[in-house]
Image (cartoon, rainbow, N blue to C red):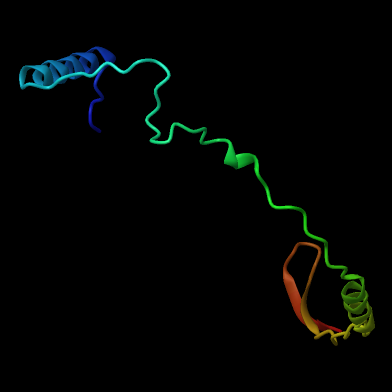
Amino acid sequence: MKPQKSKHELRRELGEKIQEYLRTGGKVNTIPAGISGNATNSNLFKTSTQFEPKSDRTPLTEVVKALENRKNSDKTPPVIKKQKPKKRLIVDDFGDPIRWVWDE
């Protein structure tokens, strides 16, 4: 796991980078308040509130009725599986096996 830098170290590194930029001829431009980076200087959020008009809903009552009829018509009686005989051990009062019997 890499050790994370403290806030103090991050501030010091950022300050060093700024000083290096200024020493190499970099210049910081001061921009007056109210100027935007947007080229047209228009409100970008103005268009986000324009929605498409509501469209009419398609009635599906006939489709729902057909589905319900199809679902209710498939009610066939469940198939009862024939139980297989099971082998059961008969034991005496002390738990010792006596014999096996088939239960149906």
